[in-house]
Image (cartoon, rainbow, N blue to C red; front, top):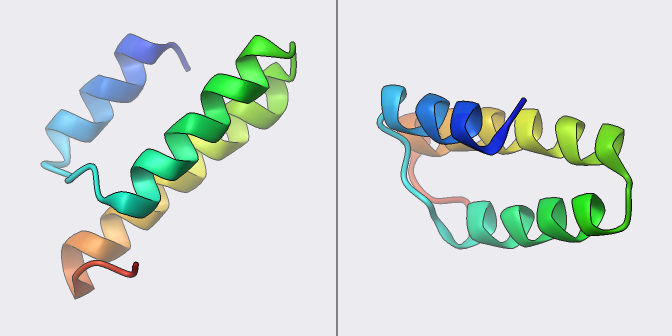
Length: 61
């Protein structure tokens, strides 16, 4: 998933960039910087799952 696709998912889902989402986005950036593309991809999907949960139940962190 590209950065543009990730942002599109965030916008389409009307998800907020909460503290935990931003922290995980920093992890994605580090993974990509260090050539850990698979880990970055997995983390992006995990972010979307967390954003969905937070949308339903409120912020987790």
